[in-house]
Length: 258
Image (cartoon, rainbow, N blue to C red; front, side, top):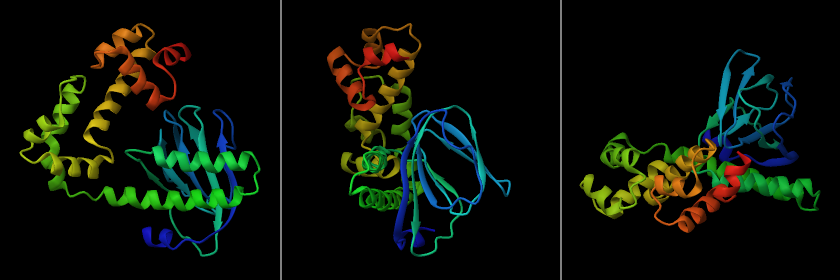
């Protein structure tokens, strides 16, 4: 499967778009183009194909819809997605697939860049979207390769992962402590961890904290200051800076819009 995508020659982009929540065509017959799509963070949708197969897609997932496929979309919730529809000079024969990225920030950036140029109808919109498709293929292949981390390597870092899951709000938790639990050097621990999860141990822990913070703020019952404390931050300004960097809005703004 990877080989044919590595050899893909994009000939035309038909559309690069953000499909707003609750909009878009639900039923597609004989799809005229290939499509790469990435879901919004909290999205969940089933794609039910004419041959009976069902493809579940979740928040942040990259998925592929084949040219000439027929299907209907069954939203689990009504979140949006970015989509790029394209054609290739060479024939691509590939079943629909989903890839769940451990870190999709760069992937999302590619989609947004193409959508921005297309929405502006700029002179470079075709080339910008083509570049995005090639970027997506490159990142897709890189993520596939990361998935092949040997199980034996994953077992080595399993004690550290259990510790993180149980104690990620502990601001005294260090990479040195985690690597020592696994009886390996910090450098080797970082290498195995990043190969498995696509981010550093520190970034993984921060993402866990921010995810927990979002849950607390969404209840409407926990103040920003208490949320910071419960997530392991001793300073509100540090928490606010980390939260805003990853979510795009401040904790106070997030609390209001939820």
